[in-house]
Image (cartoon, rainbow, N blue to C red; front, side, top):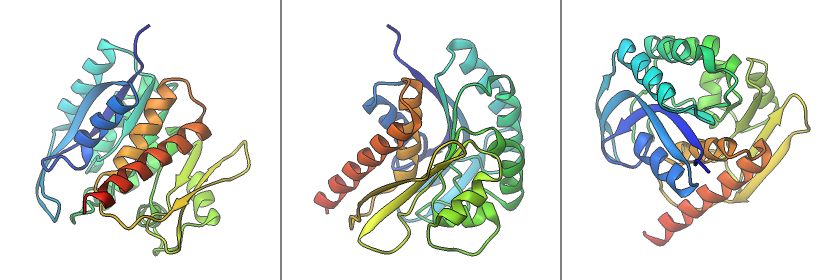
Length: 248
């Protein structure tokens, strides 16, 4: 039986901590193959972003076309996009594949510093990608940026406002909030909200958002239901944080 595949559309990270490198490791951990389309090449360390080169939109569309001609993925994971032109190229490239679940990680900034999606890109994401996504996975700052609001705690009201932008489901991540637990909220139109919590772990680990979204995409590609995929992905990220805490 052929292994499930995920099309990853994301940027590279020269430090290996986030972006495509983290996506590929995560997919391997979940037994999924990867198809890839690189949107940007970044030069960054654990502390800062030094440079970003955006891949030309025509090359992004060609990568997506070639990947989809190679194998039909069971899911698509969208990470760093960077600009309106890239968002539009991705939306155009995936236009005939909207039946495949898209997991959209709305990357706005690097944890090491640096803006990774400009204002026009955020507007294009709201217009062209959110309405077609099976799941969007913002953290608190990303949710505020998507909604053009000030920062807030992770709340159901905020998640519902993102859901109103068009995705089929929202996983609002609470890692940036306060409290002894890190609480994520999974909401969709056809079921009650689900609270997914874990003890808060004091550890620094880049790429957890990439890992979470890729873990969910890998499981959707394998046929897991969304709620179970989100719970298992949360457990996976918690294990990454425990490993980082042990390595301090």
